[in-house]
Length: 223
Image (cartoon, rainbow, N blue to C red):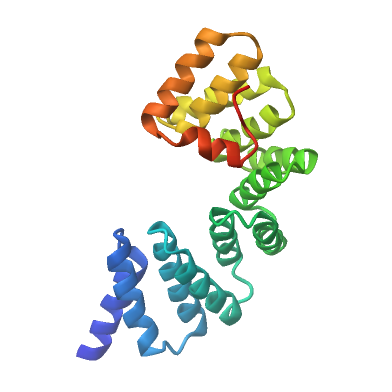
């Protein structure tokens, strides 16, 4: 009975802890016990992968996601999570493959559509990206992540008014989003509002000094 209670506490901590290091330690203990339920084992690998991803330990995260989807190939969230890690590594084509699978398994996932929208946007697959963001917002209206991704796509499409409108909505939810501030600043510049654009860009750089370099990797530069 005591061993069962101890194991139950480990499982609880694995799935409810908020600090990544605590999650990793608890989930590792669960995994080492080898749960009889393979779905639980897959979930423990996925949860530990999420914690590694939160810490920027992408190689370890990918290893855990690989094990999670091998054990439970029907877990749409695991594919979506692995896709976000590939995106963090700038492996966008590989990320899209995982988002494709996540959407196939769960076509009602606004998160997977939003993530695929951004990845496609980075690769200049702009019309398919726009369709993904619109679907994400259809599934979950005013979804901040999808609004930010769609604004990014609008910016690449040179639809500056639409980009500014979506960035405004995004910034109402999170006024300290450096990416949204920088993107809105670029859109304002392109519309001739240099003063407003400069204000947004300075604010973005104050929040994230390397924001210009990051946005340049996505194909967004202040001309």
